Image (cartoon, rainbow, N blue to C red; front, top):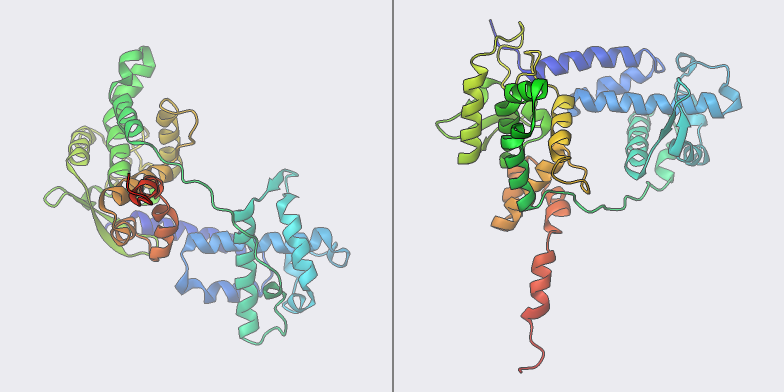
Length: 351
């Protein structure tokens, strides 16, 4: 029987989910999503579908002409009736609006930009095919993104985190100690792997036992675009993985989860949310000033690799960035120490 990979399983689930979301969009929207199928991931298409649905909800709620409409009532000619001013009002609406459950939803700079980008892509498809005559989305300025400082663990904090996972059981009693002992090797292996390779949390939970190669000390990961790549690890990751895999041998998985590398306490493949909760739990004991997520562990690795090698192209390759400019934006800015050296490197007058 052919092994079904985590990616294939996730894609199948996402395709089914996308079909359900498309039922809540105007019928003509299906053409757009069919067209971008080959150039986007299923996860991206789901995000776009949600974002575009909000636009039609905005028209229904805020434009008196469409108060009695449902999204299914909209035809493609509506796109030509929308003006640049409407898009600007939509951007203002996105900052704070109510969903169907009357819950307030807010969007910051990145949320605004993503939703307007989705709408631009939507409009561009119909405009390029001459199905509409206007494209008001290109007449407005995109929201400006202010860069935030990258949050990462310092070297001593990395050591403290791993030491805490290894020894915090000494402070526990009863059921908490039993649970800790049951998950200790898994948790240590998982966080050591994230810190020692910089792989994404989705790549981590997608690993199968067959993807671990101790001969070459590497794991085979499936990157964002679907490409497979070997990511190599050092001795600390090797030792942590081997200890966990010995424990894993004693676990009888739920049917369909036999190949998963990391098991939950329910004996199923761990999910992204479970790993996020796990990282948050342990990191919260080490630092209260930094909100540490699996992505911050990835940033920690990228920072350490860049500081050790100074090779931005190597960092981009290992992290799986398609565009080295993405890497430069995040890691080449880690020049504080070097810039401080620059202050004393040039002598204006000999003493």
